[in-house]
Length: 328
Length: 247
Image 1: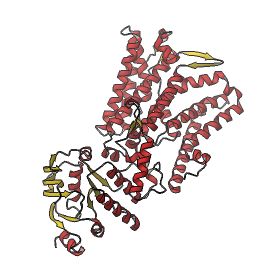
Image 2: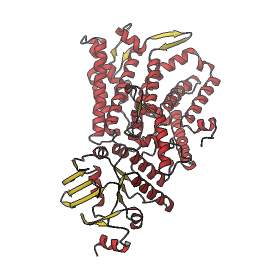
Image 3: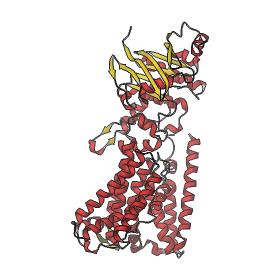
Image 4: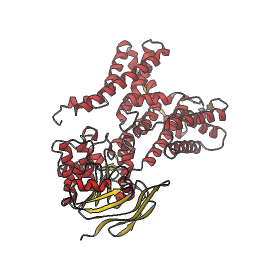
């Protein structure tokens, strides 16, 4: 086992498949349309990718613990609406509005976690219900109209979250650094810390983990809260960047995010998760969406490719899993 | 005679109106392996669940080293030094041997706020322990439990109980579904555990396995203990079977 070469060990890692796919994608699109790797295209793609990516990172931990959260898309829409409604009405300062939006998001995550751990209702049903409640609230309080956010220009909070600057031909948003920071931090949590061991054990065998004194319920609740917070942060970032807080934004994101996570190699059933894989999964789907349009495939055909990638990657992961089990 | 490590007095347990345990008294002394026998439904599992904190008793007292204790959860039981090893369910198959050994009690390195596990220490202890229980010449501690055999998994669970200074290790059907060689391995781990000062309660359907390893046999029938001092060296298997069936 120890004698295996570096290459063999790299291939055995669950992130290897997604990495190959991403590289193939990048080269394929670049070969067909060199503009694909232009500075402008890269910075445009990155700006939105990291917003979805923030949600996918926390979803990775949640799915590793054996649960998932369908309400993230609705929070992505709701939290900025709440924040800008408070601010535009002159009720609070922007900082206070941001804090209130985050606190409400944390509360929603807490309720999700409470329903799942205390009432033992599957997270699919709990977060589906929460999706409708949150989305409905966003539509109700705004009458379906977007909230204006342009008055944020130059505010330090907006600058810190999504301030942009140019490096050469690249336009870089601050959100990229939040994404990188979150990816590093959550990867550290999952692989290095005691909390990470608890998350893995919770998803792997909750009964055994509980018998060892692991607080399974608190672990799950904390991850639901984290998931809601990250979805809200992503929504706020997106609203400032696009200068609009639309109560409908984020529709369907939950499924795209879950697809990113499983493509990266995290098990839908829990017990196995990888942040590095998720980062690759995020880029695989976003690069696909961007590249397909650039090489002239009709945008409406996008979902065909995404679906094919998901099916293909699932087949690959299950094949690797079986081969791994048989080989040892 | 050695002081009692565990003493259960007048334990009763009702599931609704069904009485699963009736005035059960059980004691285990230090460095003793007690075999708990009985037919299906005799109350063995319920008694063990009460002692390991999985279900609360309806009445009765539990003493550990002469001190009366309340065992409300598995965490309480572990804190009292009572460790239960169930067939297959005690380990997380996706995690490595080292991560399983320390699950719930991971050593932290560096500032607490960073919550960082001491991987080097965990791997070192895991390697030593695997050697101690008799496996592990060629099994790295980073191996996931999922790729170990049933006997090796039992060994890891026993090693974990030994490492955390559990005074009493309860083995519930540890030899079910194991091959001949693996069964011998598990029985050897149990003897090792006793020799290093741990007590065991050993539950098995296979009376021959029990006879090979225990110091004393306790027999339950219909929620009661009907014999608690059978010496396996001076009793035949047939005699014990007669006590179990009550014929």
